[in-house]
Amino acid sequence: MAATGESGGVTGIKREHLGIPEAVFVEDVEAFMKKPGNETADAVLKKLDEQYQKYKFMEVNLSQRKRRLKNQIPEIKQTLEILKHMQKKKDTTEPMETRYLLSDNVYCKASVLPTDKVCLWLGANVMLEYDIDDAQALLEKNLSTARKNLESTEEDLDFLRDQFTTTEVNMARVYNWDVKRRNKDDPSKSKA
Figure 1 (cartoon, one colour):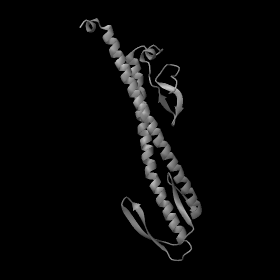
Figure 2: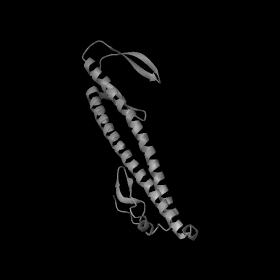
Figure 3: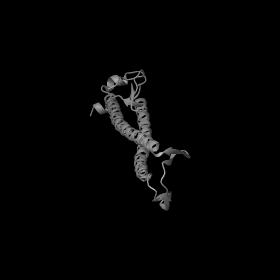
C-alpha cells in the first residue's frame, strides 16, 4: 500500500487511475489516531466520509463515461460496416437502396449512387467529407481508441471499488476503536 501523506491523512501520495487517490489501509488505529490532524475520532470519521463521498462522485462520472463508450462502440462498428459495403459498391453503376434514421424510430428509404466520398459527423454539429478509405482509417482508429478507453475506465472503476472497501473498513476500525476507548474510559461500564 502507499505511504500516508504529510498530514497523516486518509490518502496516499501515490496517484494512478485518472488521479484517483489511493486509500491507505489503517493497520494500527492507535498509532494512526496519534498523528497530527487526527485528534478526535469524529474528525477522522468526517475526513474518511468526505473521501468516501469523493469516491462516489468519481464513480458516477466513470460510470457515465463507461455507458457513453459502450454506446459509441456499436455505432462506430455499424458505420464501418456501412463503409465496407459502400466500398464494394463504389465501382458498380447501380444505385444502393438503403434506409437511414431520420429521427428516433423513424427511417427513410433512399437510393444512393455509387461514390468514393462520405460525410462523417464529428460531433458538435460538425460534418466533414472524407474519401471512403480515409473515413475507414479514421473510424478504425476511433474504434481502437474507444475500446482502449473502455478498458481503462473499467480498470479505474475496479480500482475505485477497492478504494470504497478500504475506506469503509477504515471507518469501521476507527469507529470501533472509539467505542472501545469510550467503554474503557467510562467507570460505570467497568464495574459491571
